[in-house]
Image (cartoon, rainbow, N blue to C red):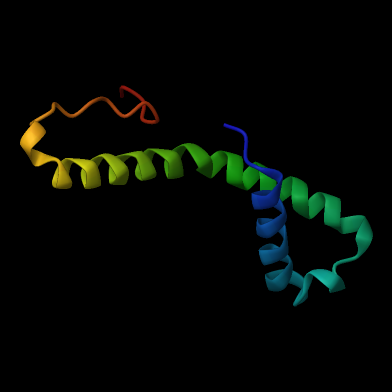
Length: 81
């Protein structure tokens, strides 16, 4: 799953606040590394976030469309195991 560049930038800036106080204080030479680390972290988390969002969306649909009595489809973001 590819994480949008805007999400990576937002995550890198959030990490910068923890480490440096503000993005502007991060040395230019380290900004690329912070973006890389943010992308790695977000890409690792993305399947879990997508699976949770899918479950929440399906559950919301099922609550409001309970007359349909549709079977619960397999979540494509969760593994079979």
